[in-house]
Image (cartoon, rainbow, N blue to C red; front, side):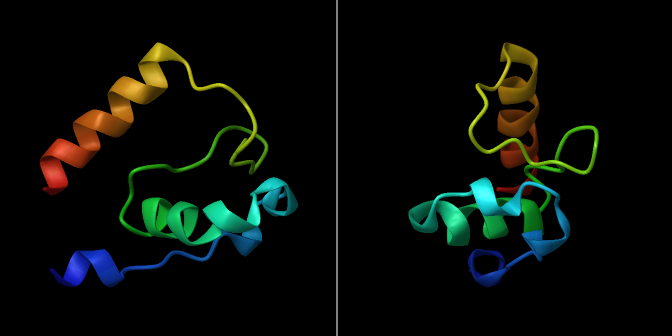
Length: 66
């Protein structure tokens, strides 16, 4: 599947340094295909806990893509 090879540029987010090394490729992929878009302040908030609404949005986007 071509969509599995997508990668987004997360380097433009203010908190890119907080993404764990092991999660960088996955976060780039999720951003690249549009599962996550970040939060206010040009942040990804990779160490924060996602709200129920945020998780529901991610799952809905995933279902639409796949």
